[in-house]
Structure formats: C-alpha cells, structure tokens
Length: 140
Image (cartoon, rainbow, N blue to C red; front, top):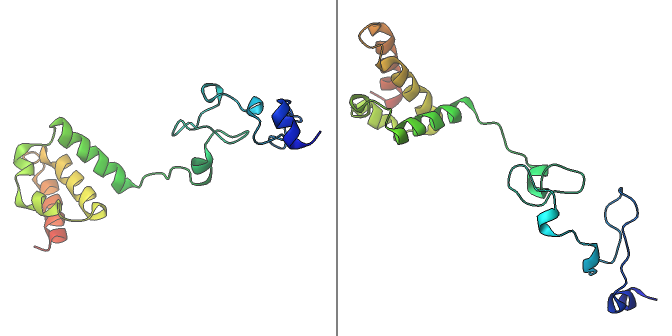
C-alpha cells in the first residue's frame, strides 16, 4: 500500500519514538496535535519547536536585554504617563530641547534631572551639575 493509498483509506503512520521529530505522512491529520493542546512559546504564545521552550522566531533570536538607557527611557515614559514628572521640570527649555535628542543621549540626562529635582534646594550642587550636563548636550 503506497503513501497515497494510506491517505485515501485513512490509515495513519504513527511517529517512531520521541526523538528525531515527526515521521509520518505530512498530509495525515491524525498525527497533528490540536492547537489548544500544543505547548506555547513563553514569549509570544505561538506553538513551540519540538523539545524547546520557544517558537521558531524566539528560539533563534531571543529577546535582547535592554540597555541602561532603554530602561531609563521606559521609566521616564511610565512616569510621564502616570503624571509623576514635576510640571516645573517639564516646562524647562532644557527638558524640551532634550526631548528632541536621541534616546541614548536623552534618557540619562533626563533621569539625572528628575532625580536631582526634588533635592534642588537641599543639594544645589547636584542640581547644578545635572543642569550643566543637560545644557552641554543641548549645545548651549
């Protein structure tokens, strides 16, 4: 009985053991696992590769660890979304000029300004240093 006859008759070829992947007729639906029973990728919820924890994309590429600047930019975005940034700080021309810079330049300087803002009266030198660095990055 040939492969085409097996498909027509409905006979299925079962997988041989757990190793080596699926060995059967590719068009035979009896050998497919239902989608809701398949193991899903930990990152995107797609079906995983055989014996792995991730799908084909995340198995190869993974998810890169964010840089320090990226983490700071995310924290600043979250603070802005929650309304935690001081309005007086956001209104400063230096802050607005920094907003036009790239993330790698902007995020550390804005985070330094945010962290030194509330200590401005008690530690004026820390605020002056953060302000000076931000002004240098803005070209002024």
